[in-house]
Every structure is written in structure tokens, then in C-alpha cells.
Image (tube, rainbow, N blue to C red; front, side, top):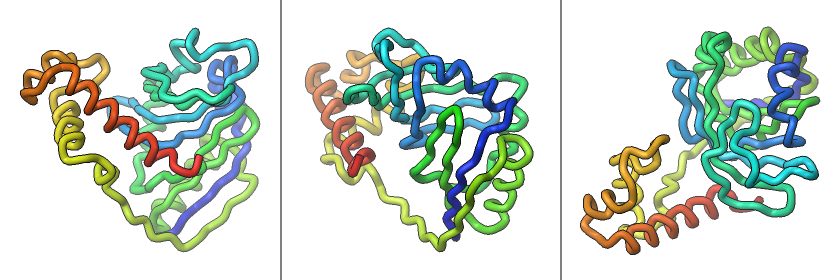
Length: 217
């Protein structure tokens, strides 16, 4: 396994496509890919965006073609948000081409002038990724390879048994789906606890997971 870090200048087509995204923000970083559906062209990501002056994150429903599902943390003009991206029909085929056996790790930064991405994989998939970047995304300005060993940690290990049990149930019954398949009242009945207790467990679980994901930021 090798770790690839790329810095690239987006081509004119990509720049044009990114213009709506940077109407309100200077840049954004993908902190965590939470869901990627290549067939449907859907991504749900945790991002940190740097907002331009005179704009408020509370007034925005979307950032370009990224729908804001929730704002989890704000510090000055930096906002950690949960976003959903739906790929346009004319680029879904290309989106599927990027379905490679790669693990994306920080930093993954996007601005109007530069894109930085980092991923881990075998030589075959990394070389294919580089080819796709050159052909469809832009000109590579710098590229580094390192030996890497990826050890996936169970992020749920930071939770108590009860928090883990309720969070898994919430995921199972569609509490985190968009739109929700179940509300907190019905979920509390499913897990046989009161609604206030359920909400408290979920909030504490979410806070612990967020603290673990954002450790060091």
C-alpha cells in the first residue's frame, strides 16, 4: 500500500463547474466521506468550509451543489458541516470511473485555484487515479508517494455500550436518512426508552464521534 498526495490546478471546465461553490466560500476541506453511492451519484460528507465575509452559514441552504444538512461546529468564518452532494447527470459516468479501491485521507482541500487530495491504495489503482485526474480534472503541479499502512479504527469504540446500541438502532431504522424514515419519538419506542433519554444519548454519541474525527483540528 502506498500513500499518494497530489496538488493540482483544475482545468477550465472544472473551474466553471466550481464557480457556484465559491460564491460564498473561499475553500473547503473534506474531513470524512460518510457515504458514497457511485451508481446514484450521491455523496454525504463532513466538510470544513471557510466562509467569505458578509455571508452567514445560517442563511445558506447549499454551497454550490452541496446541500447543507446541518452545521455541527462554527469558529469565526470556519464551519464544520454535514453536506449532501448529488452529481449532475452529465458527469455521473465520470463519477463512476473514480470508483477505485482507494482510501481517501486528509488533506483533501478544494479552492478555486488549487485542489489537494490524498489517498491510499495499491499501485494499479493509484496509477489509474492519476490518469483520470490528468484527463478530466486538471494539471498536476506536485505529486508524492509514501509507504503507508492503513489501520481502520472502530470509531464506535469511543462510545458507551448504551450510546453505541442507540446510535446503531438510529442508523438501522433510518433516523439519519435524508429525509428521515423515523422520528425521535418513534425511535424511542423501538428501543424502549423515553424520548428525552434517547435524544440525550444520541447527542452525547454524536459529540464523542465528532471530537474523535476532529481531534487535532
